Length: 217
Image (spheres, rainbow, N blue to C red):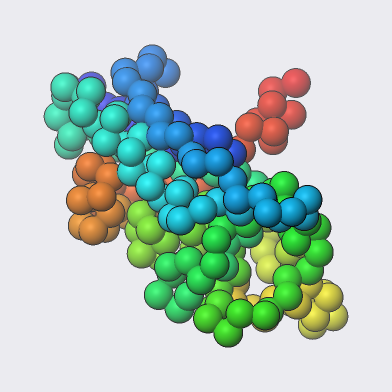
């Protein structure tokens, strides 16, 4: 029986790291893509320039896959994790309508303000990357803390109209959400060309460093 492998994506504020493991937890290879310096024209603004998150993921994944000497068919899945407490404003086709907003930006401390008519979706960084990888408009509910209309008892979007009004994001502008450990979608042929990940590979919700650290203590 051939050895199987999994890939973990860790999107950070300064770089994207991609690591492949065997199922015993041993590191097989890893890749890294640096992010550009953030655009900070004033004390309240911190934006990622261009399509930097996607570009850094593609660079890191190319780096990773160029080192892998095994059979791609033995890779069984990808876990996707990215920076929390950020905001991505997307057009109807899932492409950025504006620069992606860092957790260091003052706007993420306030409810969303709909000032750009091109914005069709408001999501997290992991939601944006999920769409780029799978074509799905889905995301990990564990990434939504702060100015989001989450019902933390049900781990779903609130069904309370007062809550939705408070956060100023209509339900149709939010991605569908699901729990960590579930499959968000599968790598599209287009994403496979861009990343060198195998097409059809399942992409799974993971959580981020702080919750994992808390659970381990």
